[in-house]
Amino acid sequence: MALYSRITGTGSCLPPQRLSNADLVSKLAAQGVETSDDWIVERTGIRARHFADDGVFSSDLGLVACRAALQAAGLQASDIDLIIVATSTPDMVFPSTACILQHKLGANGGAAFDVQAVCSGFIYALAVADAMLKTGAARKALVVGAEIFSRILDFTDRTTCVLFGDGAGALVLESGSKPGILASDLHADGRHVGILCVPGHVAGGQVLGDPLLKMEGQAVFKLAVGVLEDAAHATLAKADKTASDIDWLIPHQANIRIIQSTARKLKLPMEKVIVTVDQHGNTSAASIPLALDHGIRSGRVKPGQTLMLEGVGGGLAWGAVLLDL
Ligand SMILES: CC(C)(COP(=O)(O)OP(=O)(O)OC[C@H]1O[C@@H](n2cnc3c(N)ncnc32)[C@H](O)[C@@H]1OP(=O)(O)O)[C@@H](O)C(=O)NCCC(=O)NCCS
Image 1 (spheres, protein in one colour):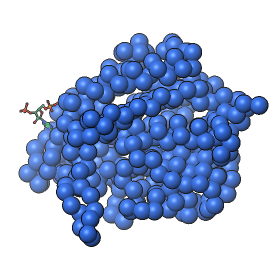
Image 2: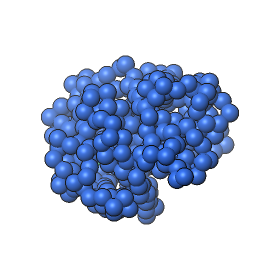
Image 3: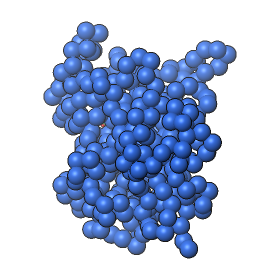
Image 4: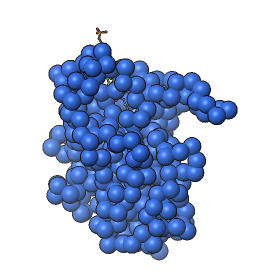
């Protein structure tokens, strides 16, 4: 009997500290950095983001999201035999945030590891979990995106610090005989490492190089629009489907203009797109599971529907997953 993987529960977490654009504009103005609500909304669609308090880590946000996902799936933490965390802002250099999260959940004993593919990290993690469940390597997985990007932002650089936020999303993926994930498509092009990166590293007890996010926004924008369309079509072709089969596009939430452009290229009306970038900003690997959980809990995304998840980010790395909920 063929094995498939299927989502049986989702959860998410936003830290309580919410900054509207007005809040961020005045915080930045106090440091001599000039921006405006109008600029941020017009260029990105972002109106607010959440920032974690000091002492809160990605595993803490992931823990809340995982507990909600487990509850939705009707499972206990001890049922889980695989945890994959997508993050670029891990709690520490090592061990993995997945191991820390596993211990906080009380789910010790199964496999646990992190995936680092920046804003496409959740797509990578989901594709890897699907492959493991299909081979029988695991049966019940938690796939998590958890980020605290506020720690790696340069608040003197207005071109980047207005774009990102903190948060986590999680889903339970279970193996079984009924197809859930239909196809996935992953890619990277390391020639573009320099256009979106945090170039610092740790050596000899010090951080060497700049440990804050750097981005060439226009270069990322142009590449993102093209690769997202390609990944969506490749994934649909693998599943022998067309864009008209998609009930919901649940894209990485970086910029409303990228989201609109992708929807347009797939000939999907914006009514079929889950948008959370306005309220969350770009939460990197957390943005897709956050958007999925919000779509499900708001009653719009329903069991039996076909979803296209897709993301792109630093690397450049990108990918898409097509699934039946
Ligand atoms: C970052 C981004 C919003 C910038 O928008 P843009 O339309 O490309 O804007 P530009 O970089 O051309 O800058 C236009 C002007 O706005 C200014 N500007 C930049 N950030 C600003 C801010 N926060 N507030 C006010 N003005 C700002 C620039 O200095 C520039 O001014 P100038 O014309 O006087 O030189 C856009 O490039 C983008 O979204 N890129 C993709 C980024 C992304 O999604 N990354 C994550 C992928 S996972």
